[in-house]
Image (cartoon, rainbow, N blue to C red; front, side, top):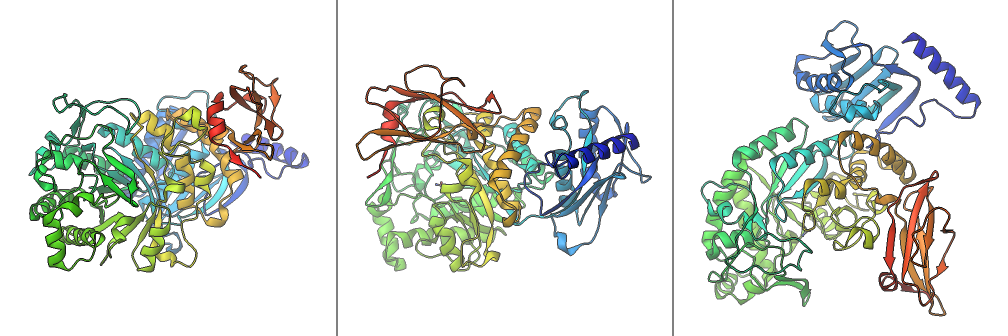
Length: 634
Ligand code: ACM
């Protein structure tokens, strides 16, 4: 160890002479960026036998650490109070809050201090990032140099809500898949898992008193292909695709998340998005005689809207005038509430098509009786009834920003998804808000070049996600609970692809949720992401390298000619291209500025290099797509 220290110091001196400030400047790369970090000079190497000291209240954390270190280093890991290599301490420091910690790594070893186990756990997550990427592996790694840079960190999150949502309705993810999703979240100190459990394409949670919700509602016809564009199944087509979680599964996942300091928020999306529920119990809709089947991804709704409102051709809403609906919801929330210890239950409320409500004589009669002046107030009435039910189960209601329309009462919280407007309005009305605006945090949107990724609604580059600031100007920051990314699964068929769509954009959301605003910096963040790729490789986690794909735009110049423009999302890319249908390499035309795409060109083919190595995907963009994206420059 001493020799190592002497060598490191000598090396550092050489680097300083050579013009670099510290030996570790490049090696420390933590996402999310800590609140405060002072880099030291030197490294601490884990000894041949690793000693851990931890209070008994932190056994859960020290066991996780010991297990990981035993597996990857192959070394003996034991517990002792005597000169530990890793020392965990519970302290009392109001500045650190419930999730903060301090971490010191110096010649004496590693020390983490926190007010409780959450902080110790996050300290360990930071240590993981300071160790070689090999620590993320699940097998013995014999070639790693188990050293950590000297550093002193004081860390705590900016927001208490650092969320990620997974839609398990459009496509089903097994209990094991969900645990994988949770593990991936924990790596970046995310702490709220929003479980979108019901939608038009599947009801995924066992409700014992209403068995048809899963025996019927969890199953649909199997479809591949493009969402909203698949063939409509015949009524008698076997419903072979689906699945659901038993209440035992749910308890297991909630406990798994809890052990990683993640609270789980269940969502039952009502009154719209309820085709699966209506299929199980058609009398809960305003069209009880309709021959319902769980939607298989085929078109049934005008999502773009008719007269500004979404309109359902097949009624996927619950009937707000039917008392049975509230009776059933009472049963549902009565069974759900005890499964989830967290204070909120999410009841959806988004994109409710009210065209079938408007046609219903019963709904009209109820509106008259209750003095509701329009159909939005009808939804507001529904939300108030649901809120009463949720409150009666000891929980608070959270919903998508549509629940504000027609008025929102009490302690209901709002999740702002249609941009930030709903969040601002909710905060002005003194409601708590989680910010998950689609234009920054919808990580189901394609993340790189459209023609390479495939279209999912619209594009969202990680750089845009990273640029998000959750506290709107003029809004009381205490009302903004935090930040959340949403992973909708219309075009996501399995967990590996969910990972591809989630990472690395999820890191951007994590840093926005955790790190001080003034510590955020795109240039250094994108470099840190590169070192995370090595860690994710070691962990066997899929991720996207779309940040290396140039942003390709076109415009028509004043002569009406089509011009191509390419821009690196990250710094340091060398972009090469052809416009003659040849495969490009780094001897092809190098991009230096806007270029002409003459009349007869069929495709633009692009490849990017970084530090002399091919790094981006090969892009082959048809001329039709280039023409379509052109903006006119006059
Ligand atoms: C939503 O994206 N419809 C909440």
